[in-house]
Length: 406
Image 1 (spheres, rainbow, N blue to C red):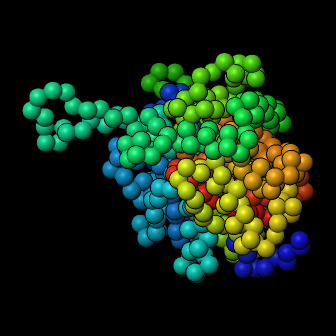
Image 2: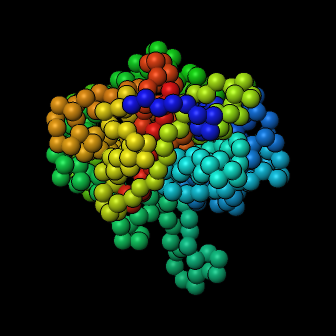
Image 3: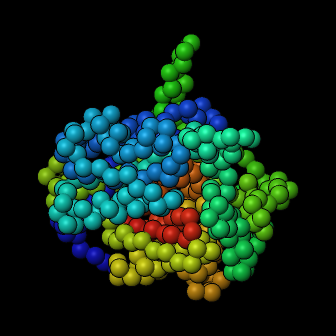
């Protein structure tokens, strides 16, 4: 389907992320706010946009215990530290792993409502820095030890009666005919495609290095994602499943990570006035949700909703990014999108995460959605353009999807 350009189109003019650090790695002590400052400065520098020209910043982050170390409101703190004026409007939001894609949708909404002309979506997370919480210490305990809570364990869902997301994803995958072996094979594919993308320097244009000063000696400079590794079907098959899941293991799930992302948007008219060439046009940006157990299916439903809003079909889509919260997500969701047609399912898989995904790259939960968007935009450009869709699931089966055109 051909779509005519309009000066009112909302376009991405700049997008950048840090390398994604591994759990307990060299980035483990950097506050997520400081990681965000890095990309917030860089995304406007690349576009030649001044801080005072950015009307609104929407900021996604998920691990609230880590944010609490700086008393929350990271959007406001980061924007001021990064040099944005005090009049800048900012908002912190938590929609689980969807957060930075939700932030982008809020930016799009602000521009459409003429509340902003230039807007920035940010996502940042440092899962390594998540503290343990001790309950009862505010008012004291008369006898016995305090209770310590690890916020990362099962991500806290079981404390309110929900299943661990790994359990839900694995059970729903089996119900859709997606086996453990298929998920392990997808994980190997992710690692191999990521390694190939690195050899071809595909991530170079979306990344800014992170420099970590040392008390002694030269600073450490992080130039690439820390989590990609070599593996095999045989090695993954030996791993035990986690959190009561029938299929999910540490090998077909992403690592806990640290990192940040930022995406800068404006109308095509303003981009032209500034002499900026858009990276991509945002065709539609939608939220979705389903039964909390259906987390592996929500990327498909989000994509279907985004396609309907855009007035196109899955056959018009050249590339797909579905976050590898677990390997179950892209496999189950592409099967749903294929409508039970095995040939089409294979075709959709071949279009999905062509440079690997979070299983290899890492998954700093608040930042990943922004990474999906920029990875998709750059790959569409390398392939000569077309439509692409990025989708991500969030805890308890929330979803977001964005359709881009290059």
